Image (cartoon, rainbow, N blue to C red; front, side):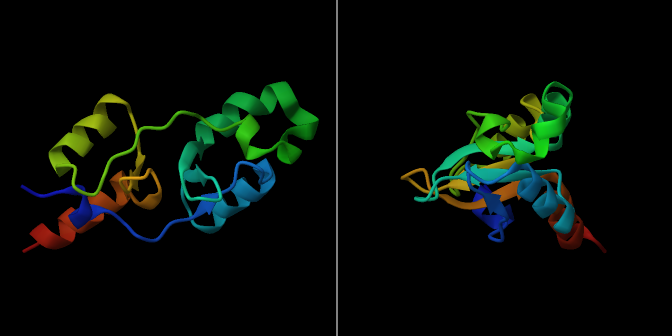
Length: 130
């Protein structure tokens, strides 16, 4: 059975909980993605900052919104998986929780990569194209 390790991406754009919302949005735009994972100095996953977080908080904080810290806006806690998790289990988690990016962590909770629907489909398509 295939595991998450086969499909996960090692590249990662992450932010600190103390980064500004503006810098997180700029990172998302620069890398054409709808979210970034929030990690601490020890690379433990603290949350995720998503397009939905932007929309949900903008109206209540308008003028100071871009200067808020990511920790004030991010979604937490966030679901994670290990690289040894069966891919079917990870896909079921992503589907049931409506998750588009799923952090992959080691045994100590440090982020080592992530799964994304976009990249999963691209890899699957490459592997199964004729």
